[in-house]
Image (cartoon, rainbow, N blue to C red; front, top):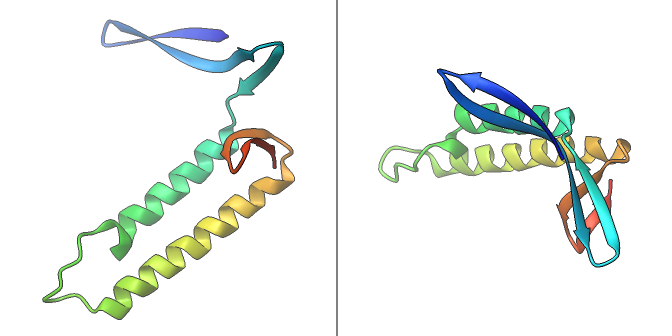
Length: 101
């Protein structure tokens, strides 16, 4: 595990860039991926600027617009995630555990 100490307002925090996890005789190294952070930021921006990120006002919202917002958000999310298939990075959280993308 690689840690880099950071000081903010006199409080020390740590940034983890890499971690080794061992299970039985196996070992996996998890490395921070800046591409994942970029995708997460893009998703956050989309959530922050679409109806999908707001509470539904049943009296004033047009439900078709709300559904369209959800549809477009998930379409864009699929496209962003599909782009990561080219990286060859090992990722956690894939169906079936660890998978190659």
